[in-house]
Length: 320
Image (cartoon, rainbow, N blue to C red; front, side, top):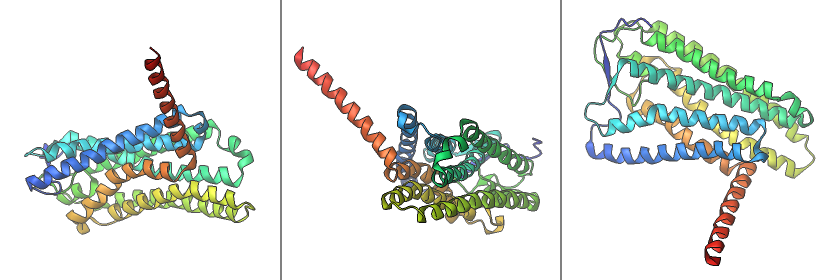
């Protein structure tokens, strides 16, 4: 990366300069972050620990939980520190690293959601061949490709953005180092960067959304041909959670990135960024837990085991 800039650090201005509001926001986002990490790690542990969840669908879900926990960790701790700091400074290389990781995990999530839609199509459209069509080699390849694609996409934008000159203001009107706010403060010509952003993000969005739409179109055909109402209900329950996540995530990504930097608006875009980078990682484990019967049953089994252990310990103490 060729650093030709005069700026050695940036200032993340964030939501507000009001001290009291910053304290309120600190505790709000701290609660969200702790819940996000605990819920997503809990979902990973649940998938690993329950043999009934040892199939590709839940392997994808556990990887999605890992991505969500990492995505939130890249952004939230720094933001929490800034709420309690007067300077809110982020070093040049730290800013580049934050952007690289955020774009990597954000892109990987898009690919994973598409892979999960394809997995549901294979499982529902031809269940007898599911174990063959979605073998370990296939789903490991899809997971690996999601991360490799995310890293390649991130490398392009990180190198393109941080090769610009930032000779004017170093104040980023945002909560983290994201591409649009950095392009907005650069004193270089950013037309190539905007073109790269539009081409790559639109291409990724078109491909991943098409995979989701085609997969669920074929799933819908399969559902209509199902003779059992119970079977249709189970499929809707399983796929509904995924469709909810896909709709929220891709909606915010399309709004945030497929626009020229001249239309960048501080208040609206920070709210959208909070939605896809902080709120969605919190919502995903809730959506997949509450709307997925297999996950809720696995949670009940865990709670029953814990309850039984407590009863045994209590009985042993009384006996002694």
